[in-house]
Length: 116
Image (cartoon, rainbow, N blue to C red; front, side, top):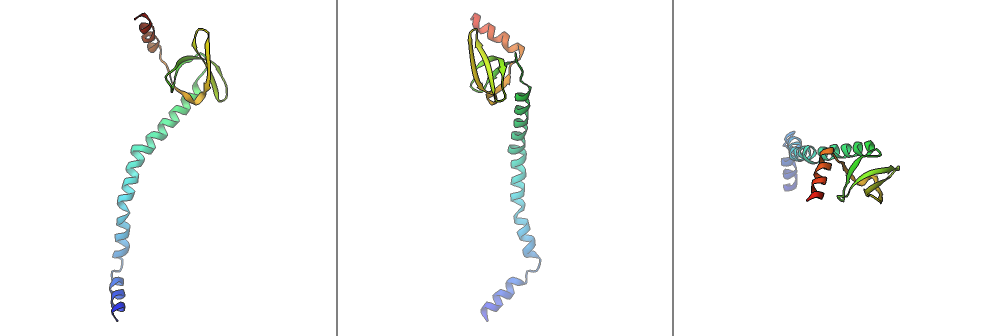
């Protein structure tokens, strides 16, 4: 008799049990939305920009690698790039290790460092 009354008491909630379980998911949905806009979306945007940069690199571009090496592109392969980093020094590296293309104003700063 006691078990029947407990079961009947739990079942009398009607639609409120479904509503409360639905409301318990709202914080999780909000957390996911916040993570999407603060972490996932900016990272995807940065990956697209990096991919576009790697596809746009051409022979003669002055670049900086992810390890900080400054060089000029002398040869492009499907997955590799050959950089000239000094007068008679060339290195071959993976294309994905290109961090950015240098601007003309950065070359002027490099020349000032040599004079110092």
